[in-house]
Length: 294
Image (cartoon, rainbow, N blue to C red):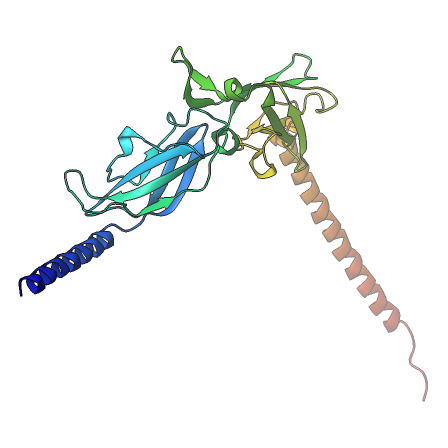
């Protein structure tokens, strides 16, 4: 009888543990839509949904190495984690796990929490290069246009705590692609430059003509779909080409239009007079002809 009671006790306890485990697991749904968002090495891991009675913890690692935790992303109620300063080796391949865990101060009997693994990510290869700023300078003889591109800043800092630019990171691999055309035309040309100072001479532009430019970072060592950075805002150079109003003035154009109107009116008047005379002449001719005898 005692043995039977012990068996029933252990069986009941086991069922309770199993039921409790299932309930806890159900309260901690897995993270969804786990993805990387990285611009100029400002790298965020993002996911859904917003938690209610549970939290998230992020673990990351270089592929094949031990996982680490970011101190700002342990049992957090947020749905993103800034890993910019954690991914130290920019050329390494990383992955991350988003774990669904109890709230801070809440215990759980779960040994392993539900988790979702991200896609692999390499900062050097995958971060998007943001739009650059640039200035335009036209030479005095108007035969050359120079673009001075400002290398975008990154979220990275050197040992002297100075913010690094994309030129500091990519060095000679960084180039710039310029797309340009005459301000009065839809035609486009492109030019690739290894320097942040881009010169366009008479082989590229016509003297005194206004041109419009867009600039974007270009890293040919990357995969084709990630070689180009974000397109800059459009800027145009000054030029000598003037509009018709600037060239001749409103008064001259108004006089010219009035002259054309007068010519048209006179032409119409002459046409009407000629038509009336012809009609009258036809009538007079018919009246002067005698009737035929029957």
